[in-house]
Image 1 (cartoon, rainbow, N blue to C red):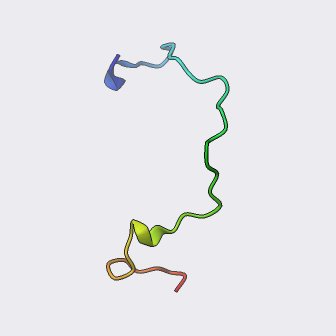
Image 2 (image 1 turned 60 degrees about the horizontal axis):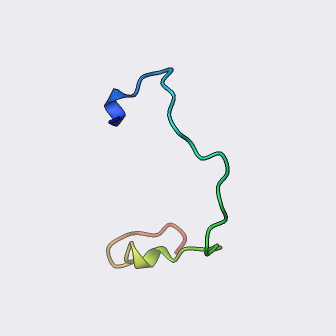
Length: 44
């Protein structure tokens, strides 16, 4: 079933209980994805 085919009231499968992730990160270094030379950081 494609997303546009889903209507209000349709039954869709969901996860009842999620397992723990293999790695829990406290912080993500966004400079890996958004270099400081190209993006302005409000915290700097």
